[in-house]
Image 1: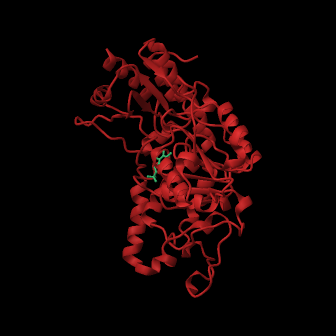
Image 2: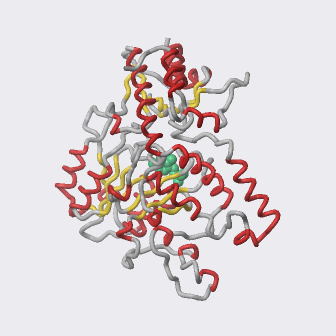
Image 3: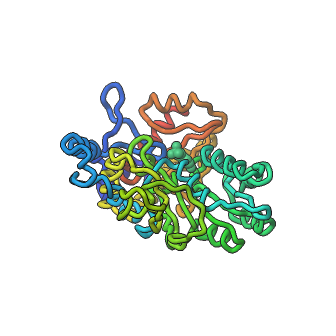
Length: 420
Ligand SMILES: *Cc1c(COP(=O)(O)O)cnc(C)c1O
């Protein structure tokens, strides 16, 4: 159904119901002022044009009101995080009480493990996918050590079969059948940052729960990309960041999901702070810690409003576009990229991301035989912003909000030029 012509790509763009969102973003430009082909939204999403206005509003209220802004700002700072909750819950498929925005991703992962990794002599193992994002691996290893166990024994890697790039569910099942009663936690990154593989959240959750393990997901590459449907699929917790597909600015705050079955669980350990305390009595200061129900109860500090303003700007765009519509376009757009790469009929390149749209998000990871980083440098010179992962993989992610079919077409044309 796809065609390998510029006219066809332009026709797809003309018919794209989400096409007007592209104009709401700033695109980086080359020295001559031509917009670059930006396919790096999986790493750092582009800046929405409305973001500065949202931040400026808070700066103005701070200048005008000082401390009174906590209650008197147009969007008062005390409950500011609440303005983000509903839209963020829509994006990850959760109930608002299950979602909170706070801290950075890795900090949140630690907080979740404080609560959900409570190892015993019998059950102290954690499973992660073998190509997990380094920060996740460091976090998990350090938690294991913190509890006095040895990662060599307690950290299990779910690996692809020899000679393969992708993890197979059956191998995770085999690990659980063999040692499931020793596994405390399954913690999987989906979509995987390297291969672009999305895992079946529901299946993995059911498998873990069947064996009595807690199941958590890192959605750094999932939020704003796939439809994780967290409430229905039922994992115990999830964490993500807002600066990749969620376009909320470098280092912006992360999100946390805690399933409602844990909303009032008094048996969970947790590290507490005043922002997790009952809102009515928070400022009386002299009360015992009275934890808020739901995900909000994990908050520690009063949050950085300027970052939250950027998130609010971005979420308003997601709200308008609708996550289902974005996903529908993403499937077509990434499918088009795959089609054009197939059309190259070049033996040197192989897409390692799954071909099934259900098993991937927007990203395709393109392995280039005997290539090195020079290829990436040439692509950059040719006006493409992509991402290189050693030893030989280019990651490209056409995002539904601001990339076009024409972007995808031109990318593949430039890849051909650079390869020849
Ligand atoms: C991007 C990413 C991170 C980054 O963690 P920060 O704490 O936000 O710096 C962690 N894990 C995964 C899977 C990621 O993709």
